[in-house]
Length: 337
Ligand code: ASP
Image (tube, protein in one colour):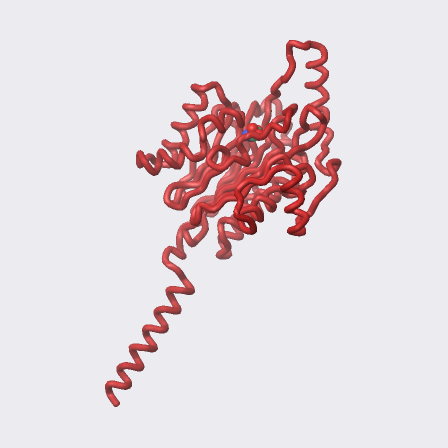
């Protein structure tokens, strides 16, 4: 009898322990953090009205607070990144989703990517013209296909199959971006030597989040570069260039001259410096921005490591950016401080 009671007690305790560890896996009380950007470029206080600056500050705060609340309520970094980027895509302030820049032909062609640092799974879309929220579609590519990157019409066909919201091209149009491309085309006409003018760009959006399970996710969304031609695709949908996430190192989202970011493999390079050289996230991100500067490229990155440390280096005059770390207080910065 005694043995039987002992055996039963051990069985009950074992079952209880099994249940507890399954419901609350190890690391489930990890620090949470989120970092975002809304593009880098010539962003000077002298060119900004207080109203415009406030609009940016408010939208950045709204976007990252939405993501942070998801994390605080026990949600995943993947959900936080997607929701945060969607808010910026829906805002005409940024060069992503509504408010995307125009191509040389007067169309809007959008790129986005997302990556899961736990599984190293990733999804991306490039050159899509009718997807309201490219970041949602990038996630579906990751979750519902065995591919990583879908482009143009094929990506839109997949979107239709998945019941994703499609919009007419006019949806993306904003007067500010339309005027921007018209001015460039005028200049090109006036001076044929200036063919292929590359304007100052900013407005790409990105987010990296760390959830209570210790999982990092990163995502980026953009309309690319104003006046781009011939189906040009930048770094934003390229895993390893514009976006990367790995739980054992960090998550990264980039903004700037896409061609340079592709050539340097910026996002993966930051992760690699941490992995192979044991650099801190701050040193790794700054080292890669220094390489970018040396090569002649401009832009910036946001990066977040597995312990919640944040880096946001850039080599332009400004970068829309913000973070909420373990203190839980949103911080927004725009100019070089
Ligand atoms: N990196 C983006 C691209 O090259 C543009 C940007 O971040 O401003 O498409």
